Length: 237
Image (cartoon, rainbow, N blue to C red; front, top):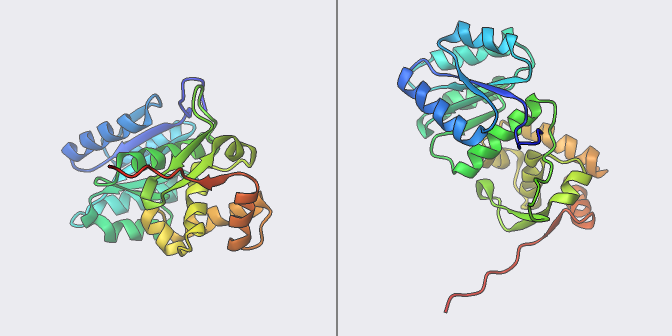
């Protein structure tokens, strides 16, 4: 990650609908800054930009009624292999989004998702595209933060322990879901990730924590100081 907080990755957004393309670019720019965000005019322009730009990833708009978005995702995955692709749309686009996830998209960016979740999803994919899947502690940040994205709440994560264990934001979020007893499918739905992506994160967790199963991974996380209970808020009087 760069000294200014950027990842060094470039996001290229595309949506066949001009108004939604502008909206998507503004949304991603708001959460990806200071990393660059470009808008592709059409599918050919998107593919050309991704092929020519080192450390780039794509955000592609999809909808229930327009199949072209899913077709664009398939072209990116086939023609620019290794490129991370997020699909973006409303809750009504859940069916094509799930199809895109099954075929290799990295995640589903929903318009109505909490802004913190959108930021985490975009920054996580950007970090991976930049070859840096770690999340360094920013200067002046507290030594711990409460993770609250996606409904996986009330766990304090020690950022220094996270760095020491070389865990990404997404891996920590998946581990919190595991600690809640959620299935991979449940975690994927809450974090807008495919089952395959959740399984991949789980495998990385086992390796980094020296665990052989889910229960052991959670136990090791607590023992190694990654997790601690969130402070109880005083009751209102």
